[in-house]
Amino acid sequence: MIHKIRLPALLGSHPLGMLASIGLLRKVAEWDAAAKLEFVMDDDWIAVVRTRAASDAVGLVDKLVEWIGGDSLDRLLDWADDVRIAPEAFRQRLTAALDDGDLEMAGFLSALIADGAVDGQKGLTKPCGFYMVSGQQSFLGGMREIVRQVRVDARVAFEEALIGPWRYRIRAHSLGWDPNTERLYALRHRAPTSEKPVCIGGAILLAFWALPLFPAVAIDGRASTVGFIRTEKGQCFTWPVWSVPVSLDELTSLLHCGEKAWMAGEPRVARSGIRAVYRSRRAEFGQGYAVLRAPEIVYTAPMTAESHAG
View 1 (cartoon, rainbow, N blue to C red):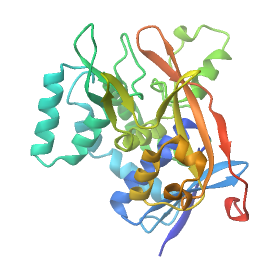
View 2: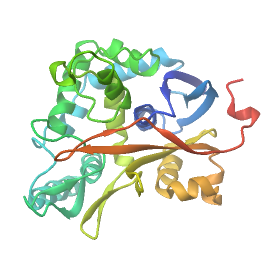
View 3: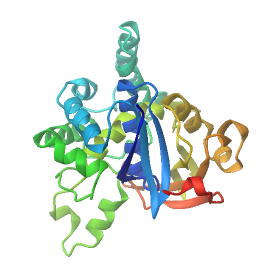
């Protein structure tokens, strides 16, 4: 039996909410290849997963708790200290993964690093658009710390991520993916540097799982990542919200079509029922540090009865 599972904490209007929703579909599709993802309007765009793998949100949490107890994330995070490495080392790692038939590792490597894009100063590989840390921070190290803290009470972490509310229990950096954390710091009476960062650990891990759907490539020596565009405001992460259930394969194709196709309603994307398109500016500070800013809506389609929660 196919179950329609509402996930009230995963909002399609929020960059981390969307990334986590996509990562969740990618994970659920490992348990049920026919799983699908859609969004319904109920004050905001709420993620809904259709699957035989679980009967409700608690059932999905159960399976995520089992997942985080394994080593699938560890091996994807332990291969280096950081993703900025020598191009030769990257190609050796990627070639080894392909030779071993390890498509999961190859997919993450291709998402994290733009092969052919090299830093002119240090001669290291250029990372994807989702790489937003610098200085003493490490992307892989930051992810490892989130994994460690989520494992302390995985059930609470994934219930917070999927069901809510988002209370920011995990004391770790959100890696620049959550505009809410920047606003949290702005409202504090103390300087942000004097306080430990916080994040929605379960959502960050699911967002990381989504990255293979956003591969990075080199174009004229510059790193370019699926989902990112350049505008007069700078580089932005852009994504659609759709109201028709889509499978993982359909979603992969949809994401690669790009913003112009989403807003133009081209035939190749029309069947997905795109209801809105959002952008979140990638605001950069100093040497590589960046955050996704609060999203703005750049396209809305006329509402239909099917788009609402009913």
